[in-house]
Length: 551
Image 1: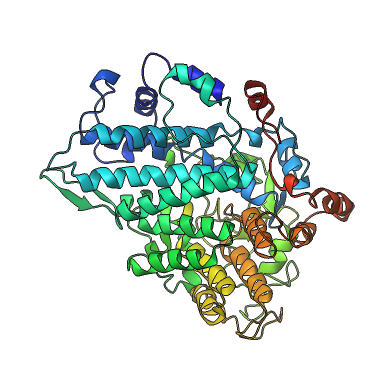
Image 2: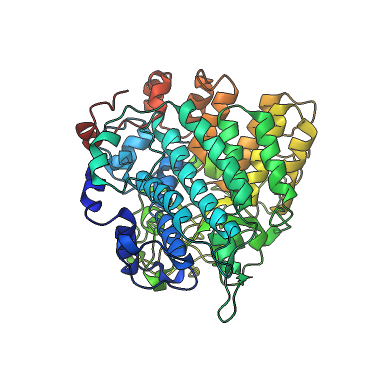
């Protein structure tokens, strides 16, 4: 981390570095309109356009975190397994044998996001106000968006590393680097207390829709694209709910979700049914009939040379850039489709007819529709249409070769509704918890949680809290599978069943055993019985730079 900042913070500020980098990058289309060339620190920032450019730099730092989140959030859980061609780093994560040389222990992308956000929070208030474009409301909105992004970075550092260095100010002076990056890691509680306060400020100041300057007149207009590419109150409430649930603050989590709903915009899952896959296949071009599912997305655009690693990670077709490093686990596939791979009954009491085979996962390249595939793939990331399993050996609609421009949902409505159900259940309101579950199941064309089905996993207001929570965990897998949430869901619910400092270890161990080979069960039982092993080790290079990085 220190090495990174020393190579970028020189005679110009970090912001100027960001500006130069962005001017040569492909993010020019992201915000409207495009600012002018970078200027010297002595003249920067001076107006609204500089604030816009600063914030663009913060948002751009979210893109590298997408594949990181998918790998770290899924490979250690029970919904994903290493692919046939997996590498050593992913095998280490899957087997819970992570070394300090694993590339996924590199936290530089998180601290890049955090430092850019810190810089924006520090410098946006320096810009003079003007009545046309930069009122105090706009200024505070931009600071609120940066606060959310900073909190997002720190929360994911905590979920992955436990204690981490806590830097709540911009690093724009090289003389500060040695001091600030030789500090002891802070505890989760210290950082989470600051996150909670920062998110309250962000919720108060962020907008509920995206606005851009008018092209010919003063003032702003609503932009459909920016409504889902920028942080709004809806996303802030989602992160608040997650943070509160991580800390077992159930009443606060319920209040955060209720505040999300009370906004009145993009707060309903709608009624997708057979159109469920449209949530993932459409871009931000006005054609997505399920816009009300989106809350905050990270955009990629192949035409603008913005891509991610998700096709490389999940595709088993080298012609499309696939290396097949990760795959859906058998546990996941049989949860979607209990009869897989023998048959897929067209009966939603026995089978996930809209969220299972052909949407969340599919068969092998090149056709993807054969059930008894030896190399099934995560279809969400690579497909552009649902796969019909009864029509075999017909080419499927795919994203173009190497065009890994899947637009990643940081938060979507189903995520918040299921967090809401989780909080309500733990807060003692089982009836409303089940109601939130049914909203999501109904939107996916599935029967209510109280309807008898093949798995006989029905719940009611008389069910024990943990049985309802098991149902919510299953539903989060079915709805949000492969989207980078599963490992964190398992840890969070283990904390519910104990305390944040003394979670239910066996709950998490049993979940991982469902995916892991039997030969690994004894090792997992011993290793994961130590909660310290739920977190990643500090990277070897970081430990060389900071001797205080000790666990």
